[in-house]
Image 1 (cartoon, rainbow, N blue to C red):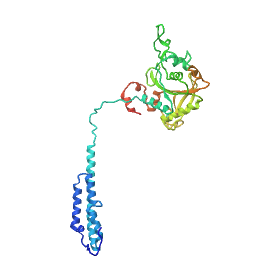
Image 2 (cartoon, rainbow, N blue to C red; image 1 turned 120 degrees about the horizontal axis):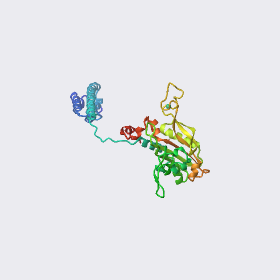
Image 3 (cartoon, rainbow, N blue to C red; image 1 turned 90 degrees about the horizontal axis):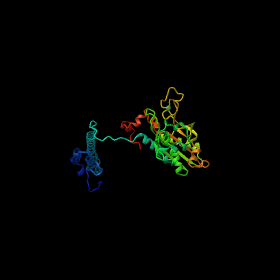
Image 4 (cartoon, rainbow, N blue to C red; image 1 turned 60 degrees about the vertical axis):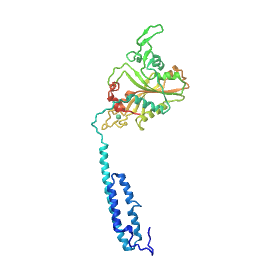
Amino acid sequence: MSAPNKSYDPVEVEALKPEEIERMRDEALAAFAAAGDLDELAHAKVAHTGGTSPLALANREIGALPPQAKAEAGKRVGQARGQVSKALATRQAELEAERDARVLVEEAVDVTLPYDRTPSGARHPLTTLMERVSDVFVSMGYEVAEGPEVEAEWFNFDALNFVPDHPARQTQDTFFVQGTTADGKVTTGDESGIVLRTHTSPVQARTLIDREPPVYVVCPGRVYRTDELDATHTPVFHQIELLAVDEGLTMADLKGTLDHMVQALFGPDMKTRLRPNFFPFTEPSAEMDMLCYVCRGESVGNPERPCRTCSSEGWIELGGCGMVNPKVLVACGVDPQKYSGFAFGFGIERMLMFRHNVEDMRDMVEGDVRFTRPFGMEI
Ligand SMILES: [Zn+2]
């Protein structure tokens, strides 16, 4: 920066002459006008308004002038810089408007174009729901176990403490599979000893026979009963079964496990309750209800807020559960004096119906992609 001294009379500085300032200003205005896009304008901005631009350098020279000359030069430079920054702002706005208009045109999507991709289906919601429930238990350390769908009657009934004349064993409830005896005789009906499994519980017996406790397994699978297909019944449906056998397990462990499951699936404020019931393979047995996931129980005794999902009862029945009957443990070679266990099972179709408001079970089996696609790719 120049400084006044005795040998230098800075009344006139070359860079501060009016025509010089005008030239600098005009060059800046021309550069802004010539900028074709925002990048070019950014370069021009640095060149003509930055710290080393001619006008900025000229501005620094002002300090070296005597007072009168300083005021005049200051006014000239100030005006020029004002004009330059105004022109810059104007050009900036013009170029931004141009860019926005161009983006609107370039990125437009023609929604009337024909749809030319091959339509893809989606995984069936029963599959994704079964996997989701299984994952809840896998995250607690359970293993997924599977068993055959064509099952020995012994595993399906006898091992699970169904007495020989239990009504479930009748052909009006159970599909019996044609078999052959050792001497070649074809057996049909309930003589064959082979059934399409009516529940996933035989996997419990198979697991207990196969391995030593402690056992923690979850068994999702397809099961069969001789029901007609209608809005609330299907002869082929899905269950998920839970079995834990270890030393010292109690109903409290069962209750805690069920609470965790419904909280993982329906939200942290979910609760369960148990009502006494009877199943041959558990003792004691209970029906398990979960808090209505729609009204959270608030519709009970509240006629102004009725709930269709739970009929204003506040609870939804989910499945059966209980402590594994010691007779089942004995049948599978487990010492009931040392080990105890709990089991739990429920229907996936039913859970899908109330979790996703599916009103007709037939929609689940007819294979129409218009039903499965909205469930998407739940991961
Ligand atoms: Zn409700």
